[in-house]
Length: 221
Image (cartoon, rainbow, N blue to C red):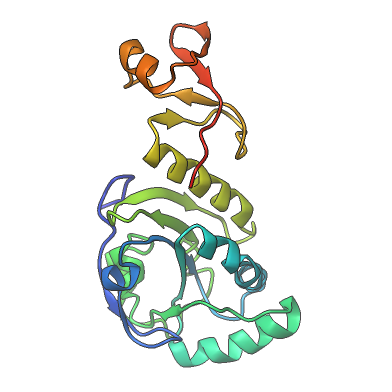
């Protein structure tokens, strides 16, 4: 069954480069980003993992945990990490899940049930659908799913931008408009009546149409 926004992210236990985890327990009360890879020692994923290592302090500031997944065993991840450090300037500084039985990939519907139960003999092309990003909220529900082709490196700056929006709108009854950046004006959510909006925003709002009510972004602390 396909996973959709607001579905509970499936829980699992797995070996990682930082020891065994139970996923929900590992997430705790934090936000999380789970991003997957079809195979170790693949070029695009190598660049992604190095970039995410450099971005990790920014995710940390936002209370977001990062975890990667590749279908190969954890012991192969160590050799890949050396290559990532050599070519990208930084090795992964977050857990990398080993999924040699394909259990997690199938649990998250990235591979069909008939894909078998081993990564042995499978190529990156066989696993090309294992190229997803999941953002998971503190309630363990999926907030974002993006699937990428193997030939397109992921834009993790955009993932961080989406998290900024989701954390803001989770705290305030707002929505963010097209190409919003932190500090830009925002939109009062349609679920807020005008009477409620007057209490929340006594300074008023701009209203180019009755269904578009624009206010300055509140400070997100």
